[in-house]
Length: 316
Image 1 (cartoon, rainbow, N blue to C red):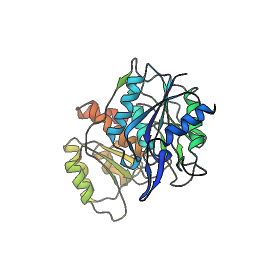
Image 2 (cartoon, rainbow, N blue to C red):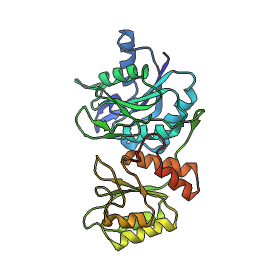
Image 3 (cartoon, helix red, strand yellow):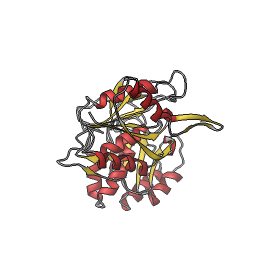
Image 4 (cartoon, rainbow, N blue to C red):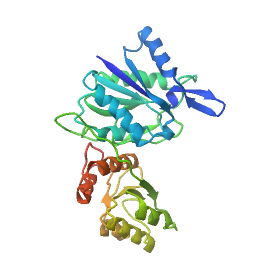
């Protein structure tokens, strides 16, 4: 098996500095080379994302940099492993699902909650497991973490400290966009707002976003209710008039939305807010970035946002 490891940065490759842990070249590379020499890891080529990033600073441009490497090297390698920081790993895994239409190789993302340079790090196990899964997993983008292999478009970070920090709802749909040939999609350079409703909330931010942004992810209560604020209604009307897509997601980590169940969600259906169903906020944000880039036709954008592209949401 020919394997390419793309090291993007993150906790797994950090060292202690005067201001806290920070990414450093050499940490992941030296660990892998030492363990290849001892026979604990299989041979692998390594490519660094330059500069290495703390995933808190990751942007859609970084998703695109990783996707472009996979796309360029797709025919040369049998599988890919991406080491990445945990804070935004779920955004990147979802983004790669959207970006690599027609992917026929496994892409496995992993990282760690403790740096390789710290005693008791979970990095060695996650690296070993990810490289093993790269040799056996079917085509698609997945996350290997704490002994579990997770759907790349449904993964979310669920704990800020535990080593078992990720979860994903199950899906029968492979984490890849089907296609007859490999096609690279890039995210839009767009202003996308992520806003949450709350009791007694000000409507200032949502009205501002509706007037200026290219897309909005709106985190609603429960199965799809929002405060009955006139300012929120006006904001949704403005977004509709401007052809700014609004995707509703639930603030609950389980269950998802069912717009139309309660009258308190009536304004969402009135202004054709996209029912995100059980999509994660990470997958919804990334999906908006890619859909905005793929078509300028507003009805076509809404159609793509409402339909699953790679198992990121379920329709039933």
